[in-house]
Image 1 (cartoon, rainbow, N blue to C red):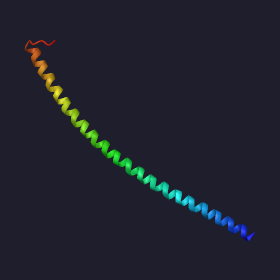
Image 2 (image 1 turned 180 degrees about the horizontal axis):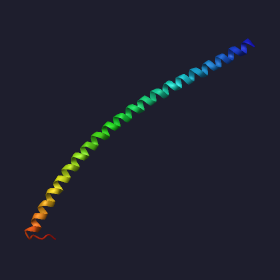
Image 3 (image 1 turned 90 degrees about the vertical axis):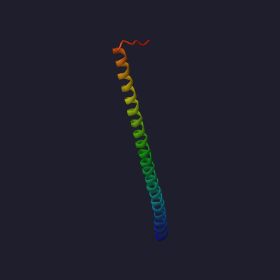
Image 4 (image 1 turned 120 degrees about the vertical axis):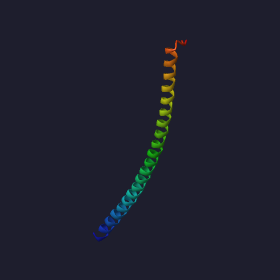
Length: 80
């Protein structure tokens, strides 16, 4: 019986060590995923800022053209 207990202890110890190693790897993977997501969020934020800046430039351009067209129509010009 003593031999059986030792075998069971050895078996459970090995299973426990494998589980601990797996959990350590899983934690490492989780940290890497979080770091990657953080980098992607930063990149996305920068791209969004650039897009918003470009959109405000485009809006200003079209607002200026709209005023120019309105002035030209008031002065009697026609466009095809």
